Length: 178
Image (tube, one colour):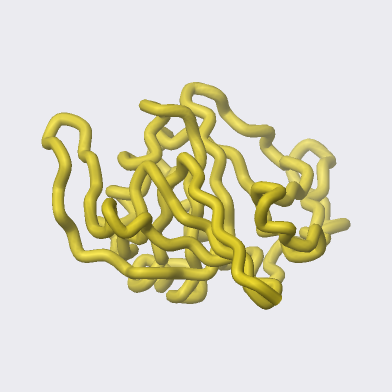
């Protein structure tokens, strides 16, 4: 199978040491989507302060090969991160990571308490099989627990921690990712 690459407006981090808080895989890559100014770099900076590694900021190259979706920085932007109020910084970075979770930022909008499971559809150019699409969560990046929710979500998807059929407050149940 030939390697295919698409460049998208997104950031990406590899969880690395930040994964430990919830037992998530260290090699897990989190692709962060959102409009300009939505808080992508801010959320990634907080994850990096907790031990994550920068992969790409603002532009990310996605590659599909052998049924695996990977993220890498475009060569000209490798190791660069724009930090609002500071400028563009040259930082240590990870050259590539598998994409295991996609986070779509919704600043100022709280997600549903018990969202239905969703998967993110990579660009059509990649011809990535639907059964391999990564899980998608939506969250407000400026919520105090945003970075913890990202790491907890990676752990939950990696270790099948979602429970279904169990009662929760209000009579709702949590559905397991298909």
